[in-house]
Every structure is written in C-alpha cells, then in structure tokens.
Image (cartoon, rainbow, N blue to C red; front, side, top):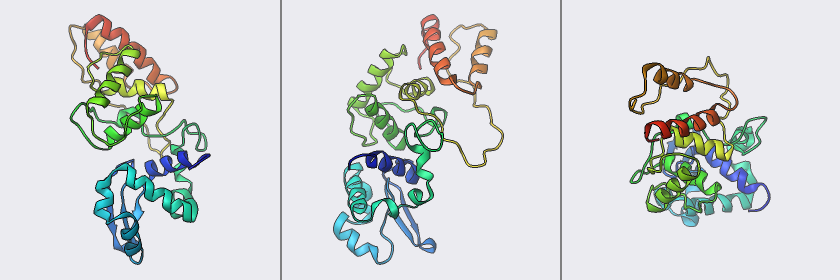
Length: 244
C-alpha cells in the first residue's frame, strides 16, 4: 500500500476490532461472520472463496497480523476500502493520527489500558507494540510480551525518567501517549465525565496531604494533563523510589 492507505488500514483495524487479532464474530442475523483485526467476512457465499484464498476463519484468526494484513490488502486491491463499514461511515477517521474531524490522533486513552508486563498477551500488548514501533522500537506486533518488548519498554522508560522495571502501568502508558501524540478519541454523545480511580502505587512514606494531592491530580482533565502527570511522576520517583 502507498500514500494514506497504510494509515487508513491501521485506523480501520482499530475501529473494527480494537486491533484484536483473535476476534471472531458469527452473527447470522446481520449476515456477518467476520475474523480478526480487519474483520474479514466469511459469511454465506464468501466463505468458499475466502477459505481458499486466506484459509479457514479459525486459521486466519490464529495466523496473526501477517496473514490478516495480507487478506486486508487483497480485499482492498479488489474493491478499495468500501468493503469496510467503518470506512463508509467515516468512523475510522477518529483513529487516524493527527486527523479525524479534529480528534487528536488514534487509539484509546492510556487510562483505559490495563497494566501489562513480560509474559502477558492480548490486545493491550499489541497496542503497546504498535505504539513502541511508531517510536522506533521495530517490534513485531504479535500481541505477546516477550524479551524484545521488555527491552523496548525499559529503554523507553529510561529515556522518559521512569523506573525501568519493564512494567507498563498508568504512568508508562501516559508517557507513551504523550510521546506519540495520541489522545482519547471523542465518544458519540458522551455523558458527564467521570473521575478515574486514584493511583494504586504504594505511599512509600509520603505524607497524607501529599498523597491526597497526587490522587487529585489523577482526576485532572484538559490539554496537557498527561504531560503534567509524566513530569510529576519523574519527580515522585526520585523522592520515593516507587515504581511505575
């Protein structure tokens, strides 16, 4: 793919499946039997030809990002992006970096990501690998937190004043999102904002008023909130020795 197509393809995968390579949706009522990150549809008359071309739905789901991306490219080369409903509706645009009707970029906000570390696997690890790859780590986004991902995480933490423990918690996610320029995409008809929970990090001898102030910072919203938390995290780590 050339031009804007790679970014559109990645945005569609995020919009369709949250980049989860193993999603398999079987919904006969809507004519849908779709697989993987790009939700390749095998429903009805499509099944025979796509099984011959890409393997069975189960094989494609287990094949990972390589075969699924090849299937996406093959379908795109034949019909463009019209095969994907999120392209037709424009919903993919909120996940384009630096675009999408005024959204700040792609992906979900750091507060929605779980803590991950070596040995973990799943969609959050895939997102982490894709983000670190955007920052120059040259990782394969296979969704498995192995030694190469661990090395990349520790390197990133060291460069951003964070404890190099290889654990990707709220502070490391915030630093990644600040570095890559990603923000939480706008939700349709959002309700009143709710405050996130206070941090679960140990107090490590911090006085009650100081700990309360830190917790209150977690509820800060608006431009620059993530960057502020990252800077404060570096200071906090120096005086307490606590981990991300």
